[in-house]
Length: 238
Image 1 (tube, rainbow, N blue to C red):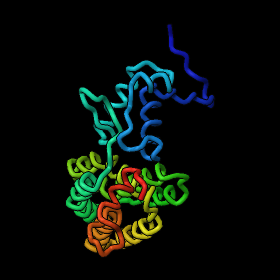
Image 2 (cartoon, helix red, strand yellow; image 1 turned 45 degrees about the vertical axis):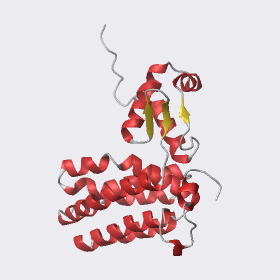
Image 3 (spheres, rainbow, N blue to C red; image 1 turned 135 degrees about the vertical axis):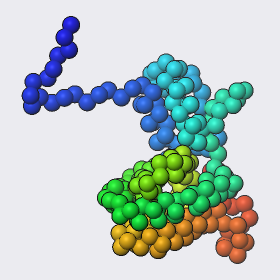
Image 4 (cartoon, rainbow, N blue to C red; image 1 turned 180 degrees about the vertical axis):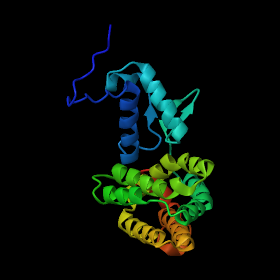
């Protein structure tokens, strides 16, 4: 049988999202908004019933989320939403601190187009919730490092982007400092578009260091009680 071809000018129907993608998108949003709190169990049979699918797309979605660092899987205890604590956050941001400013320096030196960074800033400004804002924040940073000219470097940063989104989303739920981060983003982008590679890299370094320091304070003189940041980020009462 010949495949039917729509006549010229006819609307082409949008592809139907796969069952795995539907489950994946919903779980990602729930995790990044706190709808699924850190440590929440993710039971395949319950999720399959909730989404009206078999266990196979649920299992595939959970594997993908585990690969992105949003879910942890145990042979005996099953899958659960990853818990965000100071150690996890600092590990993710420490690697970013080592790699991302250098990637941005190379992006600026190559005079790459940064239109995608502007688009991400606009999305963050109009975001309805922490998940959308966190994903826009993630895309802003990706727009800065992706054109660095080194696919391996960009790929290493890509491997961290969902975990960084989780950290920022959970942190913003207890300490909504996104206005400050947005202002820093604009300063970084302005420096990059002025072809100041070293200045942009320095601003980005300060931005990454400043965020994790504010979200996970370690100095008793910063106004936070010892352990307060960890308790807040895990959803415990302050």
